[in-house]
Length: 397
Image (cartoon, one colour):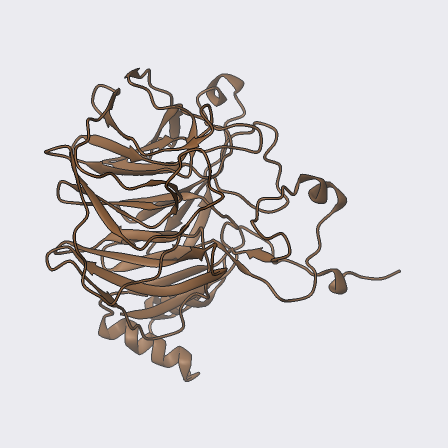
């Protein structure tokens, strides 16, 4: 595994949700320090061409009638994909959480809001979602109406849009939010999150590194014995499924130890054992609330937030009024990222050659235009977000 690309200038987002459809990655919403999340405005949708590493933004309709089906800008939501459709559920802005279902068609770049039936879940954020067969499963999160942390499993039939509160046998994972759910066969595998034994109080929160899975065929929870070494407990990390029943996790945050992570771990669900991954190249710094998406043999990681120890960042007076107190430790400074990293799980000889050229500043004179274009794509930053500026860098007088 080799980190091959690092570019700045993409969407500056935290707690966004992203999925791959073909060779495009669609990123929906997310939080950005200084933006307005009090008023309802149409959600942002950004698209990454994974061949060129170029970001574009889906233009919002100026037709108010069409905008009625657009979800409002939010964070802490989930998005899953099946075929050419993306399904968005939950999330919140600074005023309230949501439990409406929205669908986004990647062929027409249009939104719709299907009518749903059955046991409709309450408003929530920080939950997880995954697709197994014709169903979307969600678990946990903070339930706004009940002011509690969830432990239930809901299933949405993506053909009939009927919700069902699933019967569960076995010992369910404790109440939690900002965990991950990864599909492995007929299993929904749960890892991490901010956990509590009390659904209504996270004063005694903790960060478990226990693995649990829900067997969707039998409706039963299991907690397999997993062999050490083990990753530390964390929330707001990333997880995705690889081949042969393996699950990869990256990064995240532990509120007890105040530690951000940039480690990679691989869970083998056949042997139920973890192993740390060693990669080559320069990877992301420690962070949480990023997105991680797989396309073919490449993993694309973007956004998130990290501890910041530099000079004070500049925000306008209007932006300062919009800054919520969201951090557990308000003395801890964080910086939101607009970067993109690519982890190639099986780099080709051509990719390794291009990286050697870049790392050693070898002349590109005489190279074919196609290779020059690839080098340009690997090294040229996007222009979606502007660089952050510090107070000290402002002109005086």
